[in-house]
Length: 575
Image 1 (cartoon, rainbow, N blue to C red):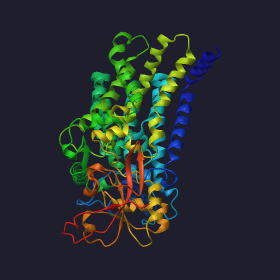
Image 2: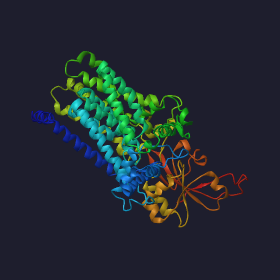
Image 3: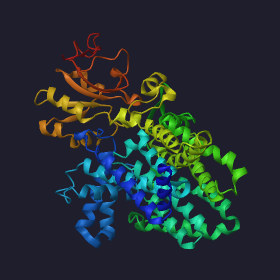
Image 4: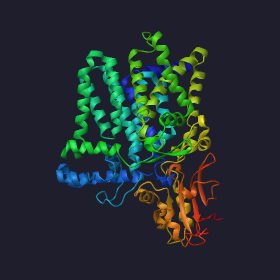
């Protein structure tokens, strides 16, 4: 048949290494473009989230310092000024992710040496490129392991995961962390299969880059240790030493701040990463401190935030490890190398989820702390797609076109969540809980990072607020959050509207109507807005019948603060 001949030619061409590389590069470019289309809030991208302004400012400071000082950047006094970490300040972060955001911002920054003007959208391009790199690594790895169909489905599943795809639009460290951790696993698998010492050296450099992104890279060590021992047995000692030593040296050389006081600064980094103010988490209908969240939080959140078809393919991929491996180990259908690699991927996912299940380990902000589990799951999707194809082949042996159509339609259906929730992907829940509507009823968080404060509702607020009045927002999670929302909103800048964090105490002596933007982070909702029935909004952002952000008016109190009339508050709808 013509179709089979075409597929045979495709397989023949893809047997050449450069063809697979070219295809993976094409996938990476497409993923980058698809992501970059929606990075700017004014063109339909997500609202500016809590930490973006901080990370972009940090990145700009790094780039400005090296541009201004050249090689003098590495002098002790310059290092102290650039990496101005205080023991009573925010948590210490390694610099690689901020370097990426800083250089992306520099590409479009008319005043790169002036630290005051900061833009969010240009820095988001850096994250979008990292997402393309993630698609390249996952796609190329899965093409080599599971063939063309497995590689393409794995790369496509990255876009189909709304939580992961949403983080690809934000100027923050979470997607970059997912990229470097996934790269660490893929690199060590390649080194284990090749067994050349230089490959372990390169894999160590990749792990060092992951350490330079976030402390999450430490979680890759236990599963890699187990993998190396199982894979190489008594020969694993020297490769492990080469890999780990190279990673630690890369980490140290890449962070000049550590040079000044290696042990003291390393201790400060580890302490500030683990001992910090408690963050509230809304889970199963109540507010928890981040260190007291139930152990099953990461497992449940992962299960209900991955599209159901993507879950199915990943589980199918895992099931082949338990069934086919025993009977087909030497048949060529399931080589031992692929089985070892797949078990490492499964083990790494479990380690990420297990660590955040341990009592006392902070768990907050939806799924972003264990986001690396999502691209690793995509690798299992590639394996599962190959198994799915084999199952279809046993039923539809003579119909190649029909099998291909079924797989393609099945994968395409998994993208409905990404299309439906655009651009508020961080509020996605799958059909296991009835979507976002069901998640609200069951007591899950609705909008944890403020991405629902889109340019649409900000422009609506700007058009309604009288000149000279202040716009308030709630909840406020950080002192720099309001500044980030303003610099990311052309409407607020054009109208010159100041934005300020709202609190209940502000209205004790209010004499005029206040305009308040509320995004629905249930863990920190102001008391006046958490009850039912919800007040009629002036403007609203919603998905699946659930409101995510609202603009409301708060009228002045009718009496003195201590009186019964003064203790009540009316929320008025403006027609």
